[in-house]
Image 1 (cartoon, rainbow, N blue to C red):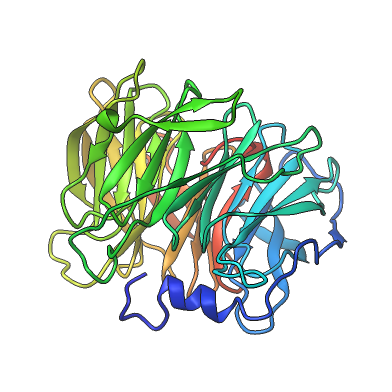
Image 2 (image 1 turned 90 degrees about the horizontal axis):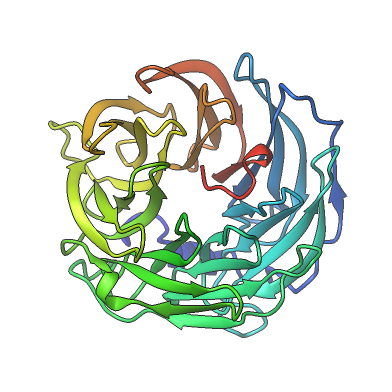
Length: 400
């Protein structure tokens, strides 16, 4: 977020930290009726303003109509804003995006067992994220390690995963160093995202503060990252790399630039993961000049369409991807029907795209053309407080 907005990320997480959490506080279970094949389960991570205790919501989606209905909610600690599901589908991970716990400058990450029938969650354990304001969590492709980006501290943390899905203390913490052009937002490193390379031999991390996408060699036996600086992508000053998405078949990774409203295509060498810039385009209509901060980026499963959410313009930008070359072309910019769209997700069928509008408190459903990838607004939506992250259980182990 921008410093002159009502609450910056730093201010928001500090405001919601006071008396927020102690380790292993929430132990309750929530559950719903048994799953149906045409009603996939969707988990929603949120910010927990004021005294609200419910932080993770469980929804069902009717794949035939796109309708959403709330099943249950859970106290998952303060600000369980970003979620990931283990590749087995049996464990969910949630960051607690706060800046301090018991006097230590850190947030935390909680692990929850997922009931196979209902999708209900049971707290397994909680570990320190070893950095302030953890804003992103994922796992490597084997599920042996959870990887966390701590925004305020500018660190990455590796937390090994036990046999039951519970987390163990961090095996490594990596500190990013540097500054950027935009003094108010790039005064130091701000790690914002980390994702596994398709081979699982590398990890890519976007750092908003240092205008860089960093490449790490991943040793899954030692649970360790080794920076390969020569393979990094250095983005133009003031880009603010935020989120990343790999193309499913081409050697490309796409970067959402939060500070300059761009999406950039990088070639990612299949053998070394070395990055090189290919193309960069605006995520906004040509005539629009207001403040805007892209948030999330995803590629459709067929590899023909790229989507980016715009906070400020409050829209999703839709780009076609040339099948042979990966060249992008802006096809559509559609309103999200709400304020401040954060994370969004394609449903397991690929027919629907769901957007979390954080400030207006809604999850909105769009119908997606299987041919063009273009989006059509629907009447389907559900009101939830401060939704941030959407994760379908059926897409375990992915960041779709």
